[in-house]
Length: 134
Image (cartoon, rainbow, N blue to C red; front, top):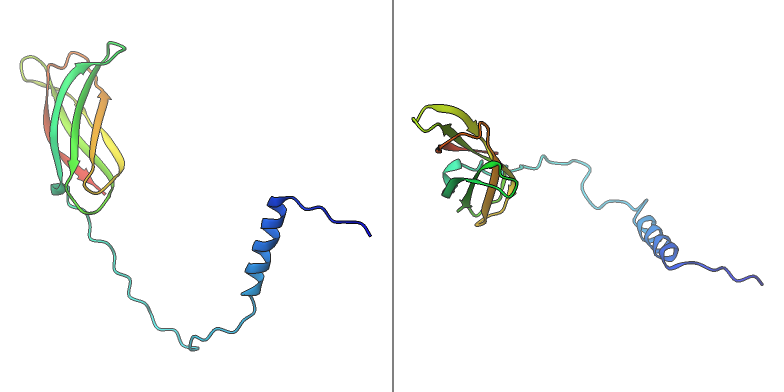
C-alpha cells in the first residue's frame, strides 16, 4: 500500500476546510423573520480633543526648512485622520504660504510628532490656524 505524504501547511488547510464544511448546510435556529438591528455610529470626533503641544521652524539634516511639532489626542477614541494647519509668515509678518501636516490613525491618549518640509523656505515664523479631523 502506498503511503500518502502531506506537508504541515497542507494538513492545516485540509483541517480548516473540514471545519468550515462541518458548519455548512445546517438549519439555523433563528426565526424566519429578521428584525432590523439598530446600529449606533460612533460619535464624530471633535477637533477640540487635539492640543498643539509645541511647534517651530528648523532645518532638517538635508538643510531644508521644516515645521516640527507635537500634537496630543486627549480623547478616549482614536482619530481616523487629523490635519493641523499653519500659516507661514515672512520676517515682516506677511503670510507667504501654508503648511498642513497630517496623520492617520492617531490613537486615543497618544501624541503625534510631526515634521513637514515647508515652502517657501524663507518663512521666518508660523502661526497655528486650527485642526480638522475625521
